[in-house]
Length: 257
Image 1 (cartoon, rainbow, N blue to C red):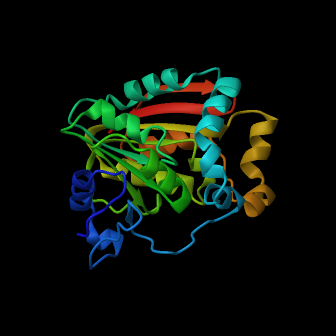
Image 2: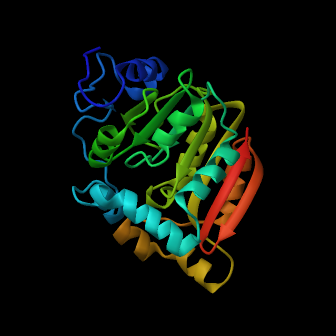
């Protein structure tokens, strides 16, 4: 494996490489880590709509961290610290754990996970966007964090690879969010935990419009799942829901396999 000169720890990248299932990743040769993260998608652009295109733009990743913190405070009444505390509770994170952060963006949670699981653990951030991952790698300060460019709908890991996995504020940008939930469930070990934060369509007329708007989905690539759909997807994949909180149109849910 070539040496990386980026901010990421070479040791963490090597630990990540050992976790990747080459058959699922469709990789036979060496991993490409020239950008500081493991790139399983090459130069391929997989944006499925306007939402994902924005995430893969040059400007948006630069402002995502402060925007995310401000938006969470204004819309949900939560600080970064309170959101992290909730994530830690939902995932039941412990020192030495292997944790996967799907659709990690610039590493808002991933790098912090690295602090929580300690030097014996590993935090892996996976995203589709090269520009988001570039920001994640540049801002990473934890020696046990590694980043990966891959597809949330086809995670390149064997069943039960991780102790926990999260996906925050990203399911609605995926063309098949319920398949992403199935993949999260698959790669977590029995007894492990999943945490999801997602805009969801609740009951009532507005929820019905959001769920059924094919026009919105076709133009933007945004797909809002219903609260009941999300709960059913988790239980269908062998998880027991442990916590559910609704704040406006956003749902926080924790589940154990």
